Structure formats: C-alpha cells, structure tokens
Amino acid sequence: MYEDKILICKDCGAEFEFTAGEQEFYAEKGFTNEPQRCKPCRSNRKGSRGESSERAPREMFEAVCASCGTTCKVPFQPRDERPVFCSDCFAARR
Image (cartoon, rainbow, N blue to C red; front, top):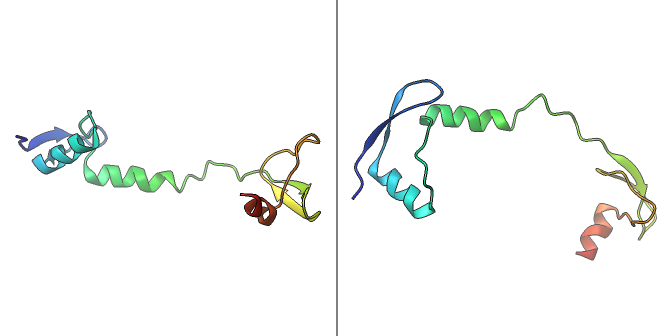
C-alpha cells in the first residue's frame, strides 16, 4: 500500500527517505503531515530544547504551610485567602 518516498529536509536541505514502514506508523498514529526534517536535524532539535540557556530560573516564594506550619518555598506568589502546603503535606492531601 505504501511506497518509500524521498523528502527534502526543511532545515539542512538534504534528501531523506520516508519509508513505507514509517508511513504506515504515521497513519496508525493518526499523523496527517509527512516529516519535514531528516533524522539528524530532528535529533538536534530535540536535544536543543532541554538545554535552553535563555530560560530564567523559576522564582520561588517563601510561605508557611497551612497544615504543619513549617516554612517552605513555592513557585507562585501566595495569597492570604488560599492555603499553601509544603510538599509533604500537599502529597498527603492527594
């Protein structure tokens, strides 16, 4: 049913093969678009996502746990009307 196709990578311009097996896999997963990048360029993009040095470190805020009263740090600005829980008490409530 499927035949191997030769596609052009949109990043490096190299030709790469989109095999019949890969096409069948894409169809099974419901993907409607053909791949636009060769395997080396896809790998480079995936590897560069996790190493983004542009992302600023997350700002943490001090809070007092509403359950046990210990001081903890949370990644959001606490508000007086909402209780804040340390990670242990939060996990125990789940």
